[in-house]
Length: 359
Image (cartoon, rainbow, N blue to C red; front, side, top):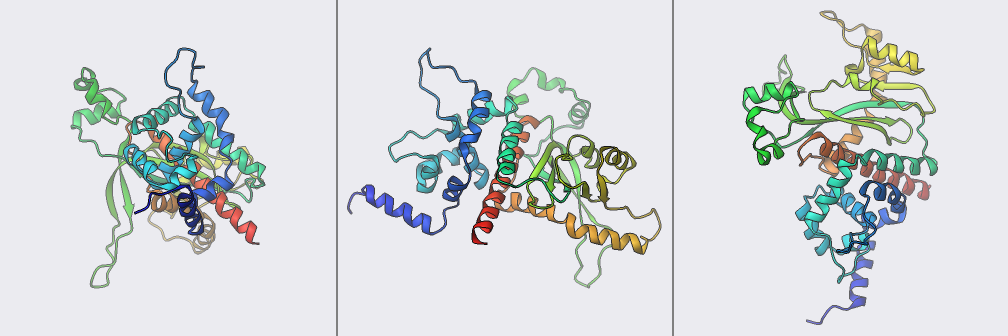
């Protein structure tokens, strides 16, 4: 067997390009250098005057987080695949002989960004890039939320009561190792799903309620381009409707209409939207113990055609990116969900740019 040479690697990379390397398309379409100022500010590295090994380039490290998010990878698996895959190395600008960040370095980089609260600034930075490219928030906005699973916690009833009250269980306080592995912010909730048709053709009268543990991702997308414009992370038990009044509405949208399901229908929300100049297209609820009026049924059906577009966002994140919170605590969960939102917008940007190029 002959030893591989430079031109053999180039030939393999050319073949990857021909097969449709998504990361190469990312490199062509997304200017990752726009993130550098926010990354450097959040990381606050020293000038190197005290010696020691210099840190990896922050843009390179951020691109590693993009790879992780796209492929739902652990830190250890990320380290292995960067060493193993030519497409990953090309995306990162690494050669075969270059040093690759190990799993601990990746964890420390992400942790530093999370603790600095940098993910919101990074999201806003890319949103500004989208607007500069002509993708302004247009035609109104659509709100929704989805549950994001986290590793289940095995706590006693007394521990659960303390956590709900915002206290650290007494037994955990003198055990730092145990405390660091306990998620004090994720919550249990019930996930309702439509009952399936039985073998005899009948449908049960009640829907299914499935226990669920983790967090909730709240988003607002613009109707025109379907980019995520506003977002928020909460525990899984948090109310969807209350988030509408907590910065989830985008005032820069060129239209005032707001679509959402019945979870967002409340007098407080309707009054809030009216005062803020928004026009409510929120689904109306069925009257208690009464049939739904025909005109409201038709109105809700028309709204559903538009509102359902937000479901595509969550489907992309869960099916393509395998969105799941591996970490402990809402600060890290916010980092994980924020990265998923940025990467979704990047994927959407890539799709729209291809569409425009072929038009």
